[in-house]
Length: 242
Image (cartoon, rainbow, N blue to C red; front, side):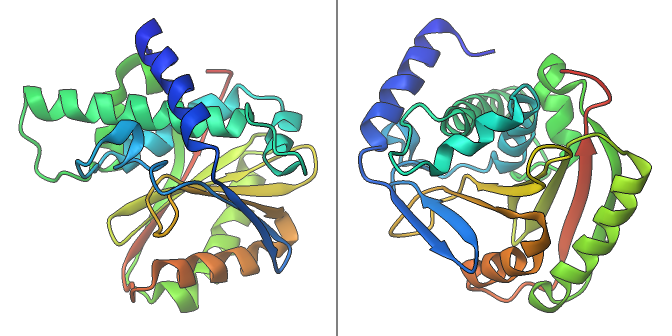
């Protein structure tokens, strides 16, 4: 858990960095670009590269699981609620994920700076013990041409196997982990959260209706800008409240 000082710092950072954001809509995708310094490697004036994205997405899963589905709406109101729950989720997960990752590296060597999902769950300790993996798939295929087809197929199977649960899909491509939240209730919506920097912006949050999954996949593949021929999809859920 974050301490009081860290939580206060987190709130101060959000007040400062959320003064220059950008909202846009493309192909029924509601896109929120956060400022350049609001990313896992730049938050709190850090200039140190962060490899904590897998920890960060798992911590976001836990925080989002605690939210009411209506709270996920607040990012895209016209007046942009500065205390949007998703912004808190992203900021707090970046701070805590970077802290846990730094502590891990300080105490023992790791094979790779970018943790696998099992390694990240272990590093998270009690914070992440309640999250479960339905299945994980590694693809030796071109991301752009295959992501939508593979994601749709496996997501259909997952939702059949685990009904009435929010599904958290972690996509790892080009050593970057991002999160897709598939809501089981409410508006049938998908939310993408990416804690990395995307110059001239920082992190990005996207929401779209579930039937618009193909447009979301195409948008994200274009965002990467580099050809990706291997990626991983992991489907996570919580059997009970975390």
